[in-house]
Structure formats: C-alpha cells, structure tokens
Length: 105
Image (cartoon, helix red, strand yellow):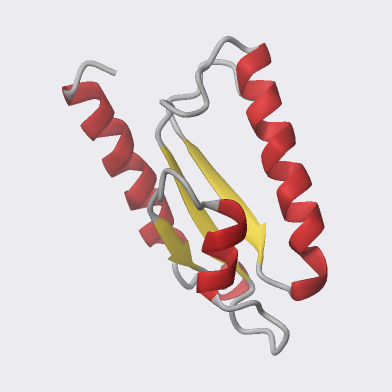
C-alpha cells in the first residue's frame, strides 16, 4: 500500500476513545514507511482530523499535541461522511509533494 508513495494523508479519528488507536496507527504507518525504505520525517505528510462533527471530538490542539508535536505538518479538520475538508486535505498533501519536489526531495 505504501510502495511508490509520494506523500501521505494520515487520517485520525477525532473521537476521544480513538486517541490510543490513532497513536498506534501512526506508529505502524511510520514503521511501514521505514520498512519500505522511506524516511518518514522527510516524506510529505498532512493530517486529517476526521469526525469533527461528533460531540466527543477532541480539540484540534489536543490532537496536534498527541499526533503532530514536533514537525507540525499541515493539518485539516474533516467530516469525511459529508465531504467537508477532504479536498483541502488532498490539496494540502499535493502542495507538500510539489514543494518537496522543487526542493530536490
């Protein structure tokens, strides 16, 4: 699934009860990237904080602190079931890929 990838949209479930699963998925993705020969720090990435419409959604600041504390990759609030923010996430990762390509990444 990651072979030949130019960038990644990491989709996190904003629900409070999914916080541990999000961290586990992020760690697994990064391990898989390393196994495929990618440097996960250098690979263009954006975060999609999904299910923002649910009452138990964590604040974006908390999601950023948990999932995106060091590099501060671009992040987007999404409600995928309604199409909200999905195109913005896609444009964000495309922008990051193009910027990486122009910088010799």
